[in-house]
Length: 207
Length: 300
Image 1 (cartoon, rainbow over the protein chains, first blue to last red):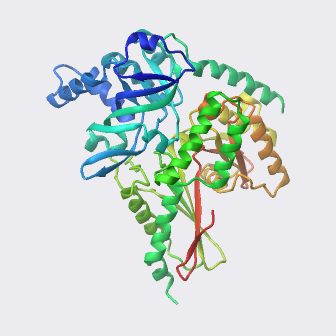
Image 2 (tube, each protein chain N blue to C red):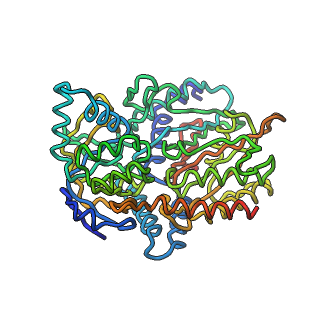
């Protein structure tokens, strides 16, 4: 098991290869469908100057995401007298963010995208160009994954997006995943898809 | 003897339905846990498939111990109600809604009901058609409620085929059914959180096919179909799917499905639908039986 702590360097990313099991510690934000659409349409590609509230959030996200991670996750949370904590959380299907992810990696200097199911060629190219990896989490393992969220540090867009879709700024303590897309242009998902196709053809023929 | 309305309105009845939701969210059925444990033993030692299945099992134990939802996507709660004559469906729906809202405040359910036009999350798991409740009248005096929590990731890879289906040379027979069902599994890859469980319906119209395929998900994994032809098809598709190599979470491995359950409906001569509802490995399926005197017990 390889251990990584944010901020993560380019060299550390280049040392990772598809198939490596990793434990990640440090700062990240959750962000899924609504967050990715917002980041691209309202922050990255919106006409300048940005409205002050958006500019403030853009600056805030950039301040802690450089060398850090975004986590495709819609958690269940508990609030004990104003303190939030993750009760059950885990990766959601990442391919839905394929049209946004490359732009988000570039704009925020992300090193790690955490999700499940893998992503497409645009994200793979961005991982290669900007030195990032896709870390495949243990889908469905909500309580196990929540135990690796040591602290909830902040939340943005909670009212507008709702609890599952908000940006939850968190501190990981040894989040477990498997690198399935690396910065060398290799996607385990692409390799496996070819194998699945071969197996599928054989199984169909055997009828 | 209380009236039927008083029975359903009682504190005991409402607590029973709340318990059903809690248990469905936090405690996987024993047959599913056993199937995952058997799958782990079958994978190569040291493989990512074995690691993944071990972490699934660890998570199941942690969820039960801490009483947290096994998966954060608590999905659409779908209630299947068997009820005696004279029960008000509207009253039952209200009880199901109240139980969902109550469970949401206890973090057993995620805020999951989103208005499809405004995008606003209701925050209490109540919305139009949310939770879903379906009814069957039966001859017994008790009410039995089964609940599945159907996650979005697996629902997104569910699908419906109209055969003949030319890309696979799938005709209107059980071999054609086998082909399109395996196609759905191939296309789902890791996106439905395998190893999955399939509920399948042969026939019906488009809407009825989906409902029957969901009904099939209520069967235990060790349940064998009473129709020998369908029992054989279930077992054949299961073994074929596990030759695809998709494995846990689609990262490769021997276990792609844990079970296949197939039902059938009559169809019109012009149509032949095959409908597949994909259930993720976090197969949240529970049931309770509530007697007219208010006592209740877990039945699944």
